[in-house]
Length: 453
Image (cartoon, rainbow, N blue to C red; front, side, top):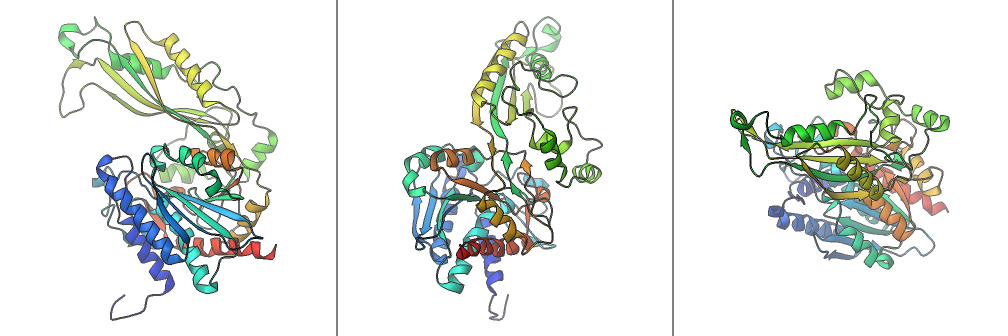
């Protein structure tokens, strides 16, 4: 706006989001430590302006947690709003249409790293609070916020933080917006999250890389051996070929199949959107069943040998793979990791030394879609979106959800406003501003629905 025009509340909120997104709060890179703290300071300042009380930047062994509360409704529930202000790296930067930390609005979408994951969704809650305080001078329920700066590195400091501050964080429900809707007019409250297990595998052979002419064909090749081990993890039907891997995986019942079938899925449209000629997965299950109900073992990155320009004819001495599993039901990530280690030891080729370094583990979470906190959230959505709310099982993992449930005894409400198509973790990440605006109204309506109780 120019010429002294007064900004509307909506425009002010969008400008605040642009400011927030301009901070490169990349938690994975120590070079950005000051920027991550700047993100925390920005949030704390905005929460104070919104009317929240007891705003603190609380130190951890890593990046800080931003806490705030407003607790003046003794007969109403207490909500803990969880989100994260850290973001993924922007690489590869050259694939962005506009600079990742110089937010740009195009076609009703705000493009920037962190736009949908998770700064845009976090600010929905902050601005819903600000709007309610501005309109009514108070909130209809009690609210606490716990906003962390390490979600993108698996929240290593948050678990001990939650355990240490259980009384401070005590609540009836944990409200989280870090999940997608079905489409622009079909809201979704996730009622299942897969667990997670991630590790790095290293295959080592010789003491040094070797000349492929002098030694080729006579010595073990670390890259070749790594490929053999990786290939052994699956059979021809796409099933994970590790003994004991499926222990604790629930049966996919007819009832579950019917529930998943209610979620819209258009295979041809998905293939076109993703640039694929075909989908892939475990035989006997639909794509949505594979994503929401079945466990996986995936390769996230493979490195070995010469990676520079041109050709360097070496036999690599070491090869590494980054591997992750998504787990379901009662699968125990520690047990699964043990079984994978046994499998690797049994299949590792002669002349290869294989080591596994576990980095992430979390159990799956299932939520009862019929509980009051979720049903009221579903009805709040339907005031602002054309289609009824659906309750899908999500293929992703949010490890801290299990911690909140176990430590605080509180029900999670996974009330997302993002879209799968918004390029989270990829170049040209963006957030539909229509969902930012409607998200604020939806959260306000959700809180107000508890006034009637």
